[in-house]
Length: 222
Image (cartoon, rainbow, N blue to C red; front, top):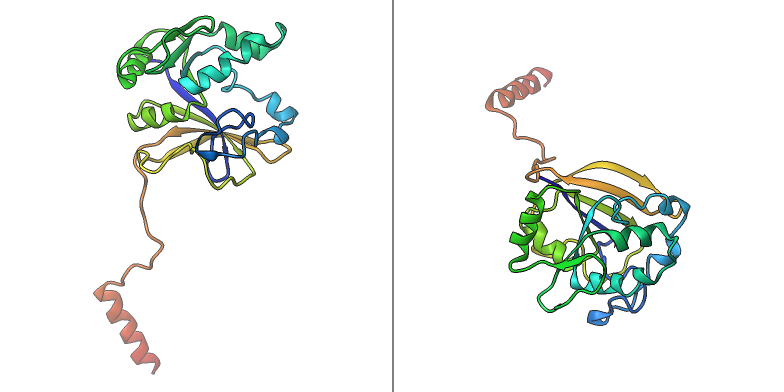
């Protein structure tokens, strides 16, 4: 079974809305579109694995698909990322889109959870979600995401769509890779790691035997 990998950029408080520009997604009155732009550096440019769709098929929500469709086909032909994204097979989750116009695109029909589960069971390269916050919420709840590629930017936005919204499925994650850009962007890869392990820093109550021992020491010392 092939993996489903979710790649996204988030603020320190978990917001992933409109990282690329002011008009990308202003829904809800979001006024901070383009908040990633001034943090890009050469390290990030060399670390695009997971955000460029290389050697993977894309699974995209409608809004992200339309943003990409309006941009990447019109970039210079010698752009490596444009070449990769334009050529990649793209699966679009949408109830309203009728005819996807971007090269090599198909609609996911019916229930999106069942459709993505079926895709995972097929032979082929791993599947890659880029952005697509609403889609991530749905597939995370169904335990279909096998890896999270998260770039955390040193900025607090206070409001907006988040990678993990209230009500997200509870679970532990294990960090498998991480490095940092010169501008402070932490590029991390996590995989699901089962239930959240619980414990306590509170001092355990002493046993009756230990209470007796301490009392005897106190008497001897007094």
